[in-house]
Image 1 (cartoon, rainbow, N blue to C red):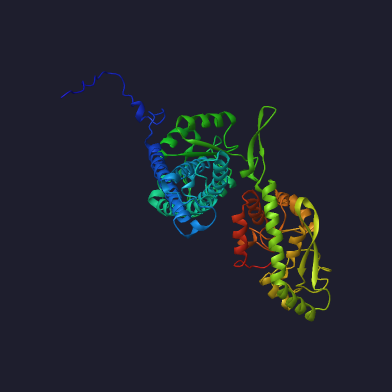
Image 2: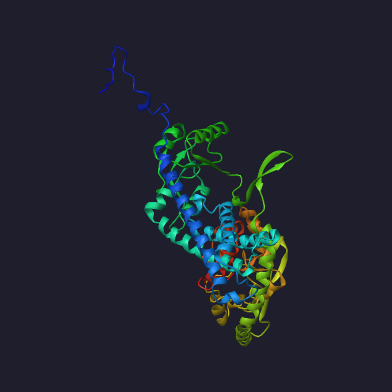
Length: 503
């Protein structure tokens, strides 16, 4: 058995071995980086082969439904058609759909704990597959000819089975033991209100994808704001490399201004050496940060706010179509309700039952918002313009009931049809109030980049009428930068369950 030679001892003073000295960088170790990435690789392999099995089985079932059931009598059908001659279509279609799923990053580790994003990718891929596969086979005139019904049935089956399979996978991976291995461990360098907001988003839902393990003080040895009690302070920037290794950090998020320019560059380089992702929280862009894009102007890279979802013509046109259809349906469905309450208002307070009020809309353009009058005539002649308050003495008896159930807002469906408003968006404010708001509240006028709405993201969270305006603005900006059709539908559904008065 081979033994190690004995250690030589001399009279030199005792020196701590370098790997025990915390002031000297220790030998690099991948131990804390292996666990999440190995888990990711195994999960990617499992999901890829699972997706492939589901896709090919769905296309085979689509063949059987199209050619082995009563559906074979629909359209043109070759009696000599069998599975062997059609197997090429199934294989080519399956490979194409797998390519689209990979192309749209369905297997990105960040998507395994984000089921809504996963479903969107699947549906988008299947729709594009239907068009592309039909176009490819018809253009190349592949024999036997492709069946349009087969393609349609295949797209529907693939969508349904992929969503079902991925939902099962999501229910498995969101279990705490597995989800913890998939989460990125985030370390903040510096701390401000944006960090608090980011942490709140990280912790949304049971299957959140990032966990905050602590914060580190910047070069000035102090935070802009003190971190909350559940975020431990792990030290200061001078010991950042030791902290990265000991804590198993996967992601460093540095607050702009917490470090000098030299230290920030050094931190980015250190993260690269330690295989840690580095992100910068830009304090100069504390609004619409999801719209930040790196662009090139005459070859020079610049960072700025790019196009937001509703800046795209297709999204605007689709939202407008939804508004017109929804506005017309709202007018037709709620016409009897409006008539009954308009009569009740007239009986209690003779005069006009429709109240017109000046509001500010898209790009700061004024318009007249319509409501069923819920207050006495000339209610603001003495008090001046302002928000309503609880138990407002100016309010009619029937007005209290209408405002509780948002019935006074129903005529705004006509504003939607005209194009002054949208079904969903930030609630419009009065020009007299905006003059003060835009000077006192940062980024207030950004909310006028989209049409105001009958209901909105802030309103369904209880922020209506005499509530904190700064909080309302945060919700409005969150809606603007994260808009999608699912969010609009969610807000419209939530409106029926969140009734805390109108504004």
